[in-house]
Length: 277
Image 1 (tube, rainbow, N blue to C red):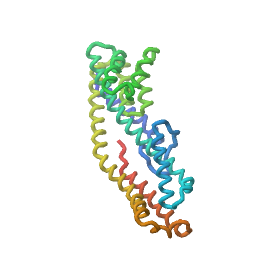
Image 2 (image 1 turned 180 degrees about the vertical axis):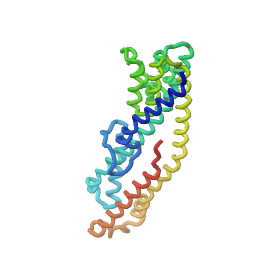
Image 3 (image 1 turned 180 degrees about the horizontal axis):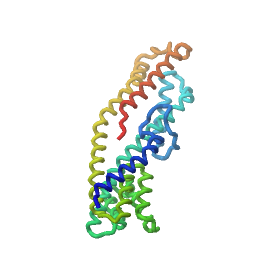
Image 4 (image 1 turned 30 degrees about the horizontal axis):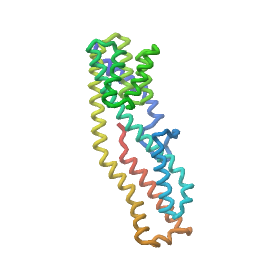
C-alpha cells in the first residue's frame, strides 16, 4: 500500500474535519480585547496574572496618580491573561511537536529491531526520559500511553486522545494516519519513516519562524514599554511637571484619552506581530 496516499488522504480528511472546529476555537494568539475565550487560570498562568496586576497598578499611578483607579482597570487583566496563556500554549505546542518527532524516531528504531508497535512506544519513554527528563511534556504523554496499554486500551485510541489533549496538529495527523495504516495492515515501519520526515520538516519550519519573529517581538515589547518609561522618567526627573493633569476633570479626561490611545496601540502592535503557524 502506498504510504504517500495514507499521509495525503488522511491529512486532507483531517483538515476538513478540523476546519469548523478551528473557526470556533480561533487562533492561539490574542485577536483583540473584545474577542477572547476566558479560561480559568492554572498554576503556569499565575506569574502572568501577577504581572498583569502589576501593570494595572503602574498604569493607575502613571496616568492618574491614584492606585485606587486600579480597581477600575482590573478588567484589563483578563484579556492580558488570555494573551499570555495563548502564547504559553503556542510555545508548549511547538515544543511537544518537536519532542514527539524524536519519540517517533525512537519508535521507528524499535520497530526495525523487531518490537511490536505497542512495545515500541513503551520503549520510547526511556529514550525520551534520557533526552528531555521525566517531567517533559512528551514523557508525561508516553506515561499515559503506557498506562493505557496496561489497561488494554488500543494504541489508536491512546494516540487520538494524545492529539486531542495536546492540540498539536502533527500528533493529531499522525494519529489519523496511524489508525488508517494499522486498520489496513500496511507497512508500519515505512509509514513511521515517512511521518517522521514530514513532521521533522514542519517542526524545523516552525523553529525557523520562531527565531525569525523573535527579534520583531522583542522590538514590539520595547515599543510597548517606551511610553510608560518616558512618563515615569519625566515624573521622577521633573517632579510636579504633570501635576496639572491630575486630580481635575480636564486632566483626568486628557489622561484617559492618552490611556485609550496607548491601549489601542498595544492591541495593534500585538496584531501586527501575530503569526499563526
